[in-house]
Image 1: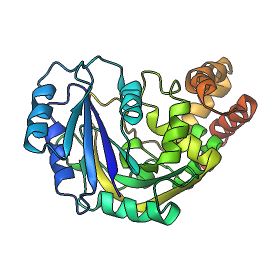
Image 2: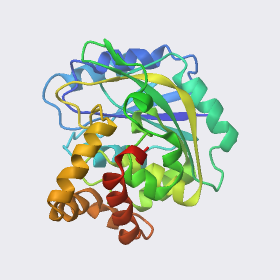
Image 3: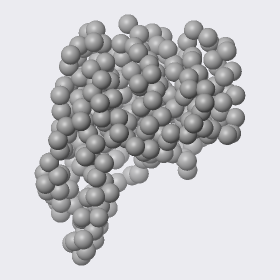
Image 4: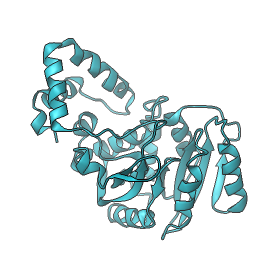
Length: 287
């Protein structure tokens, strides 16, 4: 049983060593780490090359050209050019807790015992939120940010509500990989590679989760995606602004959901629109 950990690094010299070190002390070592340096110019390449020399059977630097594809397509390139039983996305600036792989794999094997089952499967976990110095600011992403992991089992709820399933907390199987690659235009340059995996598993397969944080999710000024503390009161403010300016609904809808036309299955835009309006008008029921 082999796991491919996929890490796309861009100007990550400040943090990437800590992340790689956290992988090397995992209680489960049935993995190979594939790193694509996405056009960095800050010393990331040298750090990655050093690790690849030190651990030649464990860590692999791929795509020597280093063209900048952007976060989403860089991860999709990695997914397309690696083969394993299971796959995990890895951000350059987080720290994985020692049992992250072991506990996620245990849950995954409840859904898929081989990695090649013909049912797309994904598992994800909660996360601890930290500042750039790894000081804890929230013990749970899900609780502090009103994110319901059950939403990931429904395509429309996952699209509209706050995503509990982050790429850096996921593990998925080969059928999920196949379906995700069939819609590889969806992520574009943005970091939507993780949402694509959840969408295809919610549509065609199985979604599971581990109800505990197994990663320290670092927040700093250069995050591609970031954690923002959202409250129901804040969501109510959004609703009031929308009611004052209904055209805002259409503008936000196009920005947020336009790229979903690239998913490998049909999405009802009218259903998405209704759910978005419901979320804004009824902020106390948006979890």
